[in-house]
Length: 332
Image (cartoon, rainbow, N blue to C red; front, side):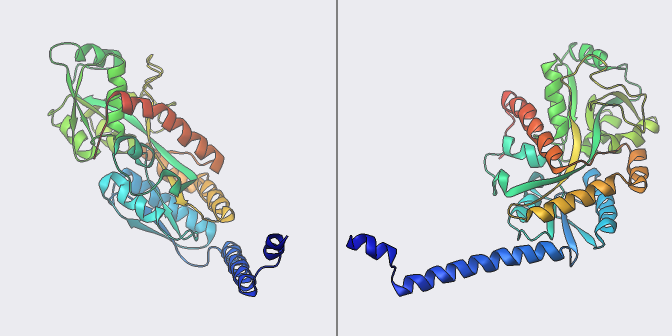
């Protein structure tokens, strides 16, 4: 009975502490609510985990500019390349969840955890906000190569020592394409380069036999007569070059991947801010001005809801993780 009384009637100091905790909690919740009510009241930062000038940087800048018009507030691009996009992702994962710092990464935000032995942040430290766009991957060979389609590529790979296939390094989208081709019987020697652009230059210069890169990177080379497109690896043809057949159309539905880009926020960012940013990005992507800017370059604007983006990411993880494991993709 005395024990019950002591629990029911806490010491006065305990009361003060409890009151202080409750007050601090209410203040914090009130502060978050106030932030969401006034957001955005200052410029927003999009961290791009790659250097300037690449496909992901191009998409992020175009979408940021259009989204800024929707929000009535500037969006600043900050390039933080390094460690296969992990450096930039880690910066955002550890940023204040106040709605003023977002990550604009590519597929590495999903695949890095599959191939790296250590990660400086947890996957759930980054919250999906919106899908921006996809640059469909295109398998290419030199313009004068006898290879004209996927069946021809597989047949050519089975003669002699096989084909040399350049990639942008372990776990890159071209690396996944190479492993998908191998699962369909191709005999390939994977040749890693520091970037996709270097891998494409190697094909143009005939140091390697083939590669796969984002449409925005290879379309100028295809149109310029330096490369021949063998197939695109997305689920529909590229609007800017509709004569390139997809892998699925050629009988290879399991060769499916694209260079996608999206927007993520630090865990703990208020739901209202996440929803408002998603709606602003979606409206920007659907605008005729942005579509006219991206589509001619071979970039497919996507958009959609937060739930759409989460569903896409989960599907990517489920599809690509077994490939990474089976091919023993490892990067320290």
